[in-house]
Length: 116
Length: 110
Image 1 (tube, rainbow over the protein chains, first blue to last red):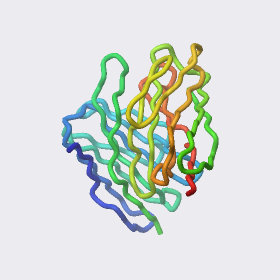
Image 2 (cartoon, one colour; image 1 turned 90 degrees about the vertical axis):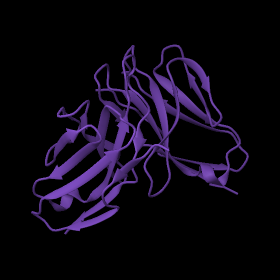
Image 3 (cartoon, chains in turn blue, green; image 1 turned 30 degrees about the horizontal axis):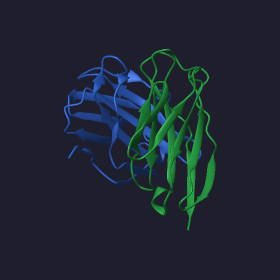
Image 4 (cartoon, chains in turn brown, orange; image 1 turned 60 degrees about the vertical axis):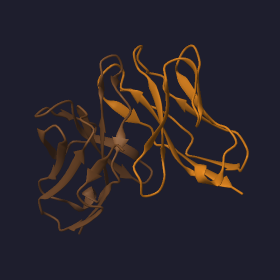
């Protein structure tokens, strides 16, 4: 059974704190993604990665950074958390399809982050 | 920048067929169209994917006209458990980014 796991389901942090959100996949997928989901805005892509040590900005990278030191792990970092980063964060992974670019994405359960 | 447009919400009754349409005017030649389903407190889940004409699996059908500027997800005989948000996904005009639409909230009533 394929699996994408996220380190926490719920997280509460204070403004200015450095926050790490961890994502691990066990499917040997090349691609990994971080999204945030807010009411009325759907899913918005923050960063994605094609391979180890590679990263690409999504639509809303400001205030975030990522790290991919190992193929199975993709971390999202909030250098200095702010209240407008309160959101649901979803990690996903997929195989790299050479024809279509991206294959089916498998999502983790999400981390609901609250920044006070 | 490819963009998709879907209805915000739809209501249906059990046993009816539901059709959700997504507009994607800037779809690139090599882009596929993918639909996902999301239940509350869960990540989205893949439903179906297609490139042109019609695709059918055990869950749904996907209709894509010749110009590929829109697509329609068809759910036959919905049940209460189909109540969810449905997202249409296309490639971002030939780049490697995928764009989720804002989703359609389907509510199925008994």
